[in-house]
Length: 469
Ligand code: ADP
Ligand code: ASP
Ligand code: MG
Image (cartoon, rainbow, N blue to C red; front, side):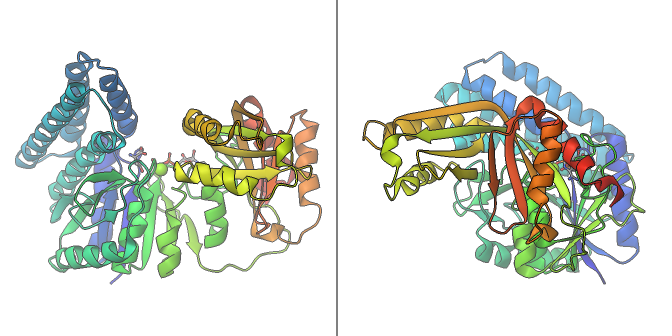
């Protein structure tokens, strides 16, 4: 019997019809003898709405709460009504939705009273999206006469550190607990429907795994249960040579190595959470990206090893948006050992993740790329820690940039790839602000103005004729 974790993203569960479709898909596999653990994201757009609500209450906007409560309740009730047919099941789901949304209202009101939104309370607010969606999916499965039950990540034993907003699962204890709690359910023929994205610290405080984190939940559970495969169901056929929304002629890749897929996800292929492959790599569990609206297609299979075909120098191009470029400069940096270490130590201590780094040979400046939402914090942290000590004269930033990443295992040791990339970009008159090549030679990334990003991606896709590969 094949054991599979199936994760369904926001678009897969965007409406009652979609949820019924997903439930039928799951029932079909269960009918074929598959043993399935389901992981579900919030309904499409709900996490964004919760972020907005958290921001509004942070500003003390009390009037926002009743309005927001009505919107969220109405949306979920409408979806639940379409997702379930059996009256009893529907009423049960409606009751859970109402109770959960009452709790959300209390949390938001509490934030108004306290007058501050901490990363901890923000995660608590964000956890409601998945708590609501799983109850509907659970209901839709019971409607099809499956023994389904919904659980939070915390309830099935996923434990993380307390880095709220971007928490990391503590794999040893998680693996042990998930196995202990989920296996008996599977043995009883229950289909567990687990909230993606959310978990808890060892003390039971709710955490989130970072945006798009349901993918990560799926592989964490997959690793704990040593499943045969993890299936990430989404709205495209698999991982493509580029985002089909940018390059409509992008091609689906039937097979990728863990390493290539990791480079792609780290460098922005939104198709998967950047850390989702870690548990799968660790336990050597194949991951498959599949289209929920085209289940006949086997999708992209990500596996441990893959022979590189000659001529496959460049496999894919991704665009990373919402980033910012920071420049640290000063004559005092030249020939002074430890400057770079100091800069990155300061950032690291403040939990600011650096996506890309470059330093010119003159050593007079270091440039790096970070998430745009962290820009203000990064600049002020650096200024407080480093300015006025003679080493660094200036910290400047640009926030209207994006990163283009060109990925492919065959790029290693293939001369001329960089020249071909930059010729294609230059032909479109696009200016390149910063370049970095990882020493793995699996990717070349560069920074351009945000308005040039999609043009650069299309130019390279065309230059390497990836639509024909
Ligand atoms: P889900 O809601 O299922 O998690 P996401 O929106 O997070 O879905 O991710 C799927 C989307 O990722 C696709 O609709 C596609 O537009 C985008 N995407 C970006 N880069 C790629 C790529 N290289 N291959 C496939 N999809 C990509
Ligand atoms: N709902 C969360 C988000 O929108 C997690 C996910 O969709 O994977 O980021
Ligand atoms: Mg996603």
